[in-house]
Length: 248
Image (tube, rainbow, N blue to C red; front, side, top):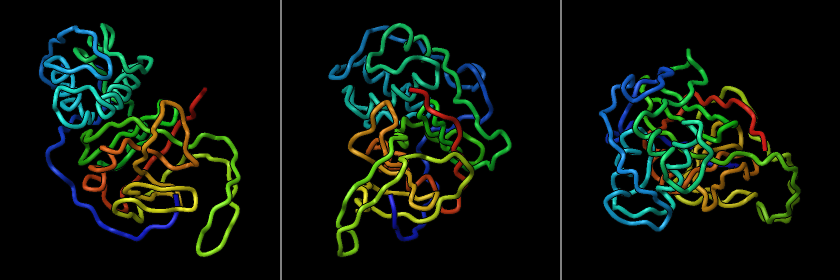
């Protein structure tokens, strides 16, 4: 969660965009009508109903990974994000309440109504990141932020053994994206995948573990498949707004 070189990113096409206003239903956002298959799905499920779920999530701005009819980890993290945005308790199971919400989805809560048209918003209360590009919702993702649990760790850093301590907090505030690295980047607190820094040593980055509760040293962890696409969507000097507080 520290040290990176600067790098650029260009806006990428191919991700559905929806109005950034605080809109409540699919009809209001202009998304196509959707009829849920209604089949209960859990991780490991395969088939046409899973593909319908993946396509619907993608249409609404979530990233379920490859549209392949297989309910794996990428699809599960997109389901979690959707459930949290829609006021549902996040669970890996897609049943009646989730299907109903997919038929009439809410837009994510806008944290900075007068923010720049292109910006990232991190809601610590719900553990959700929303990327807006040109005033449209471009990507919604499940995240895991700082755990809030003080830590002290010993690591070999810059050629010598050092001890690092902190409060594992993701501070709220208004920032801008700065440095970034491609691929795995070693920090004194661990490995970060495709990190994009926005507040000193705090970054968006991919991680192999992105649980439902805050678990990082302070960075904003992303599912690996989201960290793959984010650098092409989120440029340098883009505003990042962090708001809220997670209640365990």
